[in-house]
Amino acid sequence: MPLPRLLPLLLALAACATPAPPPAAPEAVATAASAPAAAGDPLPPLALAPRARWTRIRIDPRSGIAAAYRASPVLPGPDGTQRRWIVANLAEPIRLPETGGRAASAAFLADYRCDRHAWQPIEILWFARRDAQAEVLRERPRDGAERRVQEGTLIDVFLDAACGSRAQPR
Image 1 (cartoon, rainbow, N blue to C red):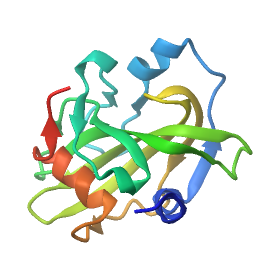
Image 2: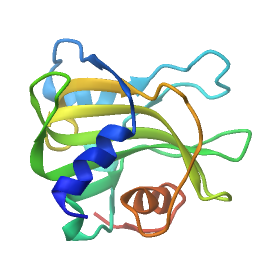
Image 3: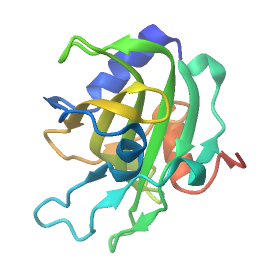
């Protein structure tokens, strides 16, 4: 997927955005980012794993993503979901209209339903640098609805990676 088509897809994942807190030390951001558990959420917060433990995801270089990673262990939910962080380094930095800044990478926390080929985004973090460094924006979807995933899309690649396929050794 060319970069011009990638931006609307990524920005459409979450409709509500808030500016990030002041940046922490670079390594601290990548290892400490975690989504707080929402009211009624049966799963505890899940943090990004340290960079050395990320697993690369096979991705089409034409997608607008330079590299993607499974960036946390999977946290299985009682309803069959697989909660996981996915980090994507963008091929080219994009402008973030909410802040006027630019992002070179993004981290997606979502519950993936492997059996139904669906996902429910929980949080998207945008970073000024690759590998989830220097957070600049945090977004949460407003509706919290589960979304069906179409075959062959970028989200399909992330779903496959969250469910255990498409991973390759670093």
